[in-house]
Image (cartoon, rainbow, N blue to C red; front, side, top):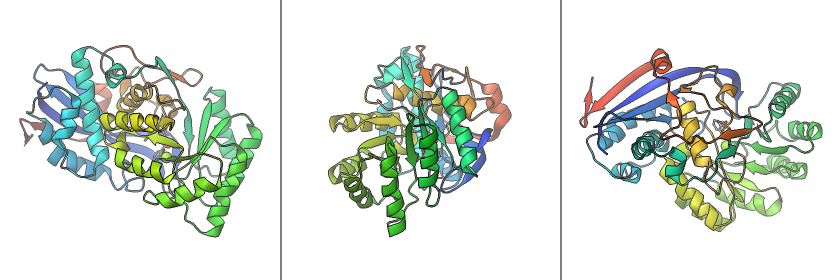
Length: 376
Ligand code: OSB
Ligand code: MG
């Protein structure tokens, strides 16, 4: 495979419903779509799903643009390769910048799967024909508004709901949602918002009595010790998200006893190859995994569905339908869920047509690299 041209497209889509986490609120999202074209004219699309601001990870849309344009695309264009892992190896000396890498890596996998005539899921080693989706609900202005959102998603058939929490918005909303939905598979995600003060630890421990399937990332990304200490005190499994950027982090966290569940995000791990490896290592240690999301547009969402078809993804993944987030998505058909189940496409490549017309209309900025140099 020889990539002769690569381009970046900064695309802005409005969100159907404002999303608020412990750190920020969003009404629209801007992601960078990546297009790789090979010598035969075949095209693979990927998505850099970095948030605009550095509140989830140190990366931003601007850092992703810079690193992709200056380092990643020039490492790919003009290089021939047999397998997508060679593409990732081509930029191995670039430290960090995993969201940027993931977007280019996805495009390489899609191009490769397309060329071999196999669905992306199969190229990754996926075995499921459908995957179970959960939804992630942001922090709402009131508990009543949260209950209304949970009701809407449960009625839509989603079997698992995750609630964003933060100090001051934790025990009471969880108690009320649990009271209204005693059987629902429910979990919470703090995005690292908790410190180790007595009050904050008390709130986290108080969540233990509500039958949550997990507490995701209560403490900061580097604070593995606090996660390990809390896990020894509570029965609810702790799930790590931001703490695990690599398989090395995962191995350390396992030795410390800092997790019982792993959220695997393609973006956070730096691509599909790294995500598959994390799945394999977690499996060797008996750790169930699920695929987390970054509110991906359709390209990244389809990659998440493909990854979620691997056998170790035994918990519902954040691969809810496009319509939960976007009125019109960048792929046709969009990702759809019926009673919380998403079918894994059985057609070669991404499994969806990329809506280039919409992409063009919604593009704020674009750049193209040809033959290893910046082109116009
Ligand atoms: O921690 O899972 C997270 C979105 C932005 C930043 C962090 C997170 C999220 C989500 C997205 O929860 C869920 C989804 O894409 O469905
Ligand atoms: Mg999370």
